[in-house]
Amino acid sequence: MPVLTKRDGRIEIVTVDYPPVNALPVQGWFDLAEAITRAGQDPEVHVVVLRAEGRGFNAGVDIKEIQRTAGYEALVGANKGCYAAFGAVYDCAVPVVAAVHGFCLGGGIGLVGNADVIVASEDATFGVPEVERGALGAATHLARLVPQHLMRTLYFTARQITAAELHQHGSVFQVVPREQLDEAALAVARDIAAKDPRVIRAAKEALNGIDTQHVHRSYRFEQGFTFELNLLGASDEAREEFLNGR
Image (tube, rainbow, N blue to C red):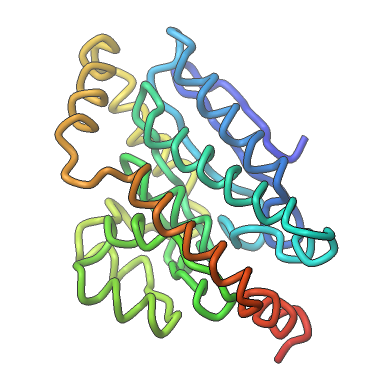
């Protein structure tokens, strides 16, 4: 299974493994959303750790799937799947610790931006290349990682930012060598899991309730412009250029 779950005490470990680069197809986003939601609903689970195998944490949506599917079915599915997965992380009844290595792009930003804690390896880089793919989205979540003007610069230029730089902004809790990433994420998760789960679950709901940004509505607003760009033909041209290496 490309989305795997494993229990470590009171911690549910959700692992994404879609070779070669963890670019998720439509069903993959829904599977991920289901795994995270199910974990949060289990009273025996106190914390979720979200991690990935392979070269990087997440490369966003599977553009090849969108291009080989006639009409807009795959595009609509990808947008709904991302919305579901990002929302599952944010709405999970228990804290979600993201363990990030390698590249974290596009949809990956949606996941970590909605996570409660981010631990990253020294080789981790974060970015939203959407403007180069003819799409919009995840600015909502990038804005949770960096200040407003830096977010805009990264978004307009499609540049990436390192884990060390995000650590300076306070959005990445800890940066460790790659081989220590899983244990570092589990250490944070175990610290949280040791607390009274009634208090932690209440705290998660309370923190979401006082959040100044309505992440679901904001991201859905962004998605509307992606559909507009597709109707104009700009998105299809950009995706073809990307797949052809131009």
